[in-house]
Image 1 (spheres, helix red, strand yellow):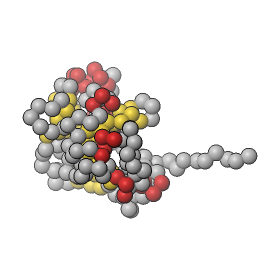
Image 2 (image 1 turned 180 degrees about the vertical axis):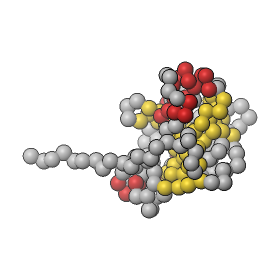
Image 3 (image 1 turned 180 degrees about the horizontal axis):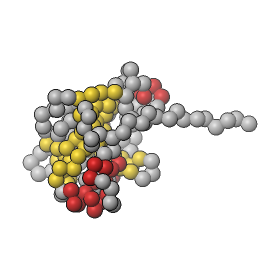
Amino acid sequence: MAHDVLGCLISHAGVTVRITEAEAYAGSDDPGAHTFRGRTARNASMFGPVGHAYVYFTYGMHHALNLVCGPEGTGHGVLIRAGEVVDGVDLARSRRGGVSDRDLARGPGRLAQALALDRTHDGMSMEGSAPDLLLVPATVPKCTSSGPRVGVSGPGGDGELFPWRFWITEDPYVSAYRPAKPRRRPARP
């Protein structure tokens, strides 16, 4: 599914973004997934119906958007990592505070801010006749690439086992790849 959302349009609150990058997360089979250890109050929407949003707050400052994509109860999802604002550019500019148009939605936190998404949108349907948050299917671009996910450490960050980041090759609206930094345990006295 992460590969299949490339090129799709996502719209909310007057802004539309063409998706250029996404990452897959496979529930309890994926040590990099928020749902690896099971259902919690924070990740409950990831266990819900296909086509709904999982919006979470991360690093104490950013929201990020996932599309729930597995059978109910499995915790599978696709993180929408980056995109190009194709409609509502002035509105996205006002939300993003003077950044270049290239950077309006280039990264998951930036994308959520451009689309005015926060935790109140968690669990919302992204399908149907008139949802507040809409994902419009498109033809997947012909030239795509895959590789390791951004910022995932530990076993889930292994790019050989989990090459689950997908992007439109050479698209200027794809975010910069940054490998995870291993967490250091404090030294014991």
